[in-house]
Length: 443
Image 1 (cartoon, rainbow, N blue to C red):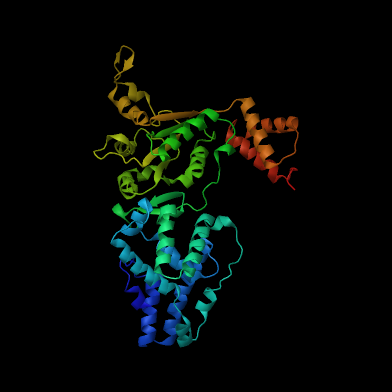
Image 2: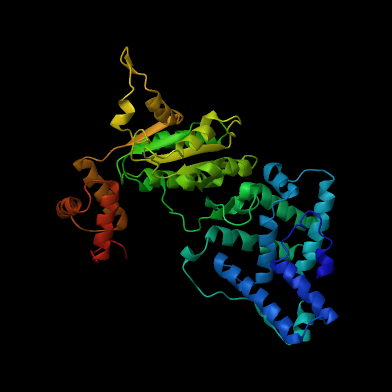
């Protein structure tokens, strides 16, 4: 196996501790009898366990070796794969090297592990080629990723030569992209351990809320503003950063998650950033600015106390830095505060009034952050009538058969003792009814 992997050029930068490289080392030691058989068996089983863990994480089935190799191909970010993501496969000398690599991968797909199994008295690779997964909830893995990997895996396994292999892989890059951005909708970041630029690591959010905008009852004007801005963004037209502000539980965060679900297939991705990570914003942008996706950097429940200065990092990134913010990045934030930053009476001590305008430097610095959001959308608390309309809509969607008069009375009782009127309260009330076994119209 090691002589096959040594032929790789564009895809050669694989970590030495990857499953493929570890198996290469094991095959070499078996042939050279460099270790005792029981030690080699233990090393093989460790890599088999890693294949099984990956199968569990991603819901892989059937031939786990093929699924693993396919996953390597579609997550390897190299100059060739990233170029294919942007413009597809085009004529050029680099194709010669790519086809060389795909010929090697074709050999790896067809690799016969029987000699290794016979030498060590094991049969694990035979079993991995006909793996039957135990049924499990889709919430445990990203079904979207699983289906894409396995579909491409079957095509590559049936490819007659490197030419067909080249066509299948490059078509996938063009259609879905490469790396984790091509497979997932949303991400968080961390700075611990080794990473890319600035030590930033991206972590896919596999169990993201599947809400769509139609699931949010009411707030039609607000949703339209958000959709119009986002559609312009994904279509490559001018768009603005967006601040959604207003009362708690009115659907601000749900709206942003829904907008990502709505526009995911048009290349929209979301990266969730927390306040303590604002100092890493420049490094995050450096990693995503040249990718063929549109990114929303999402900041939930954005607010700052008087003593906090993280908002200055955000101001610089949005508009005030030396480097222009890339066109494929927007910032969407939610806040319960209209001005994001808490204003105190101390801020007003140095106010001068001239023609009715405040001249306080302190206040102007803080309020200038809000002005950097070109679109501000207000989500106010619903009226009693709107609250019941939300409850009724959610109840009908859930299949509840309770009559309107009873539903209204119970909904009013619920909101009095559960945080007041809001869309969140309405959803919690309907969840309560479902949990109590209230009859539904579902079969």
